[in-house]
Length: 135
Image 1 (cartoon, one colour):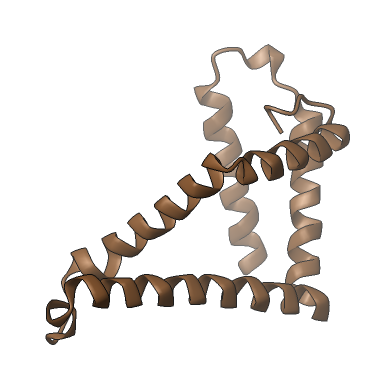
Image 2 (image 1 turned 180 degrees about the vertical axis):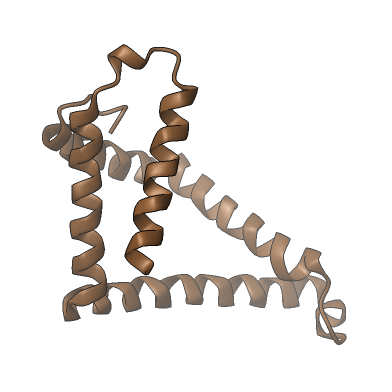
């Protein structure tokens, strides 16, 4: 049943994108299917192999640690306000988002994020035949 839901959802998204397209004759289907196959292979490898599960655990622990740092910062700045019963939405949701956004901004400023984006785009452009920007 999961696979049927997946394929129906995929077909619906593709149909909506096709309907919304202004220039249907110039749609390149080959890169779309290549990237879809790569995504399915990566999904299988990450969810069904031991190495993939270890990689997911490592990434998950990294983000958990980042959210713990955000919580420590919130407790430091807002002190007793954060410790009274249920914390408001501002403290529990919005401030960690601000923390992660600032972290992304720092990575962008020091040209770390563009470096990774450039190389991932280069690698994907070699696979699907599109430009680095589109990849």
